[in-house]
Image (cartoon, rainbow, N blue to C red):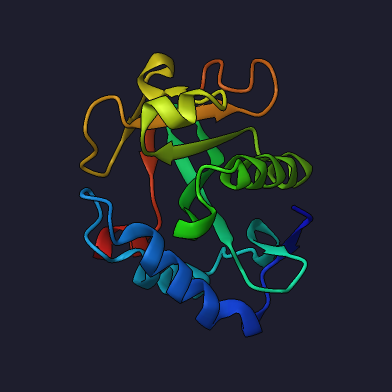
Length: 178
């Protein structure tokens, strides 16, 4: 399958809303607020369109979406800006084909080019663990959101990027509205 990985455009928004709603509908842990979260994040002051991507096969239909948002790890004597991956969605008919994995690689590449040292995600440790994500607690990084133990994960985008970074990961206000 020939896929195109693109920066989202405003003309893609409605199709992304539908895709994300469908992708998260069968997930027990979802409260159905993912589309609203995306809308809120797009209006935040630090939203970066280049860190929101869609995947299209040759015919132009959007089959996957991912969004990275700047977040802060606040330690005793430092603050470090990293990115949070939320949400990552693949249309139900296209799941289990590696599209989400390919999209993560593209997002990670863009994050590296933008100079971010790491990406944090709240999600399934088995799935994200296959992609190099480890428990954030391994780096003494804790979460301000109520996240089940073992589901707060992080990936350094370059060796040593998380050395001496420990602290509390703080999310933009949009994450606290849901």
